[in-house]
Length: 345
Image 1 (cartoon, rainbow, N blue to C red):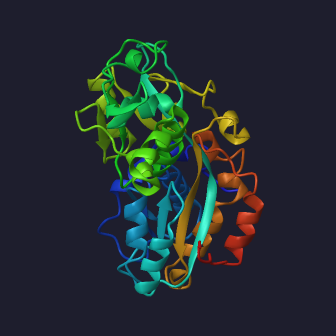
Image 2 (cartoon, rainbow, N blue to C red; image 1 turned 135 degrees about the vertical axis):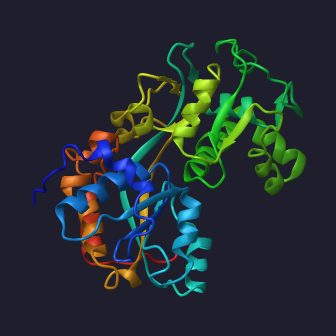
């Protein structure tokens, strides 16, 4: 099936996040990940133009906030869909069930990379996860001893990195991107650097592993609770800083940003799709099944989102930067049959 008005939907889609607050509850309500936000907004605008339903209301706020809102209960005063750039947790599922949300669909829409970008006119960087751990961790291992992090510049971290002071803008803890950053950068870097072994030897396994995620409090690691536009604004005001972004956001701001390699791999749609680029993740949204036959157009919206026309290799989501899911057909079948997810453990 072909739909009209798909070519230009990205241009005005991001305006949807601020629209529709006072409109009637015949609109689909969506909340969550700032990474998924532009994709959901593109689909919402195209849905409003191609179907006889109101344009859905799409809000950001972070993956954790979206999942929490999804699990507040069932009814027209609760949201229908939570966007998430990290997978739902069993604690979220348990919270949902405690509040009467018994069936949730997990819908994977594609993949995205997490990139490390700096001012386009600054020096270039070639990182490893260990570099980021040694730059941001509260404690590191120096000459076999656990010490407070002494590193002031990236050159202090590793001799072949630029002599530029460390200042990093990273996603706040409510963002799904932060969960992936913690696991695939800080935890992996802690292990690569040898710090994990030292921490576990000193504190035991549980407390030693926690030390990998304890970050400096001296101002070099700054949590950003807003979306990527806030991170970009911070970089504009601090030209020597490095920010953590989604690949698609970087790709839409290459006039302002340059991207670092990670383990020698440049992030791109191709290297994320192939698995070569090490810091990537699937993107999801979660649907409250109890609302499917209550909220007008909800089933039609989720089927439209994962259609070939929207989420396929030639669709507008790929054009914006989404890495298409090679198993999209299986997702389409699950969505059609409203298959709920089971427990994670």
